[in-house]
Length: 105
Image 1 (cartoon, rainbow, N blue to C red):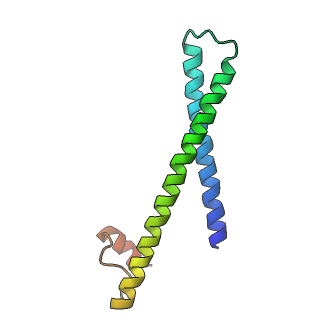
Image 2 (spheres, rainbow, N blue to C red):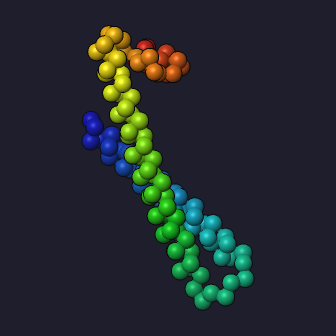
Image 3 (spheres, helix red, strand yellow):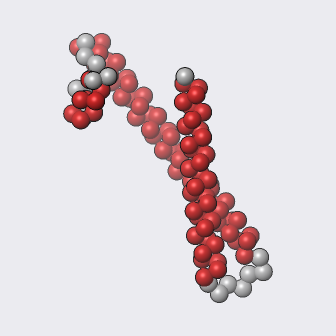
């Protein structure tokens, strides 16, 4: 189950990189056709925009993946510690709206 969730997360991360790179490439295309640039091959500039956007998107999404994974691990650890001490399913550090949802599970 965890492997399938990990694969699904990898697919979404890759799609996010593609979307960020494609959007950056589109913005680069609009910049290149809107300006008066003396370029012999404007598509090389557009490919560079796309590649740099893909790299920046990869960095941001990698950071997001690490941070969200750390938050989940810390939350699960806190829930397990509180369950062992008080026999509750929800940690006292949980926000009230989230506690209502989790207590119903």
